[in-house]
Amino acid sequence: SSDLLAEAQKLLDHSAPALAGAPPEYRADYHQTQAEVYRDQAMWAKAEVHFVEAASLYRSLDQLNQAAQVFAYLAVVASFEGGWEKAAQYTGSALDLWRQLAAFEHYQPTTTAIAADDENADGMSHFFAPGDNRRKNLMRARDSFRAACGMAPDNFWYYRSEEHTSEL
Image (tube, rainbow, N blue to C red; front, top):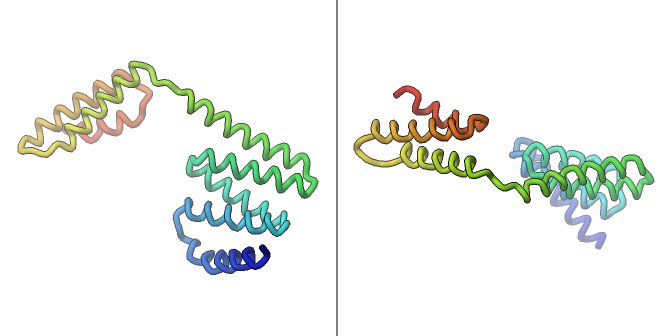
């Protein structure tokens, strides 16, 4: 087991410099993996530093499930260090994210939201439609985008779509 951990650490050390400018999802995975290697060696403080960085990156990427899992790992690390208050805080952070995920799981769009999505999808179809009559397609797209905006006035993205046809 210690040979495997040493090999894993060698690979992590080798890959770390290449990840400096990498996309955040790669850096998050690196930090989580590094934290797990430290955790498996009972190097609690080092594990915590990397788990905290991974959780931050996952949250910034809206990868709530990954972030919640990392907060749960942080709670375990804190408990091994005897940091009961930290363990409770990390557990609370994981719980908050799991509650958000549960709310997403039960989301049911209204019939108006579904109709607005359909109008927006129709607008996209017209906007990207091939053919000789580009202006006619753009006008149809604009009409669909405007209809979507009227049905769901709080949806920022429908307005962004409509802006692409506003010069007609």
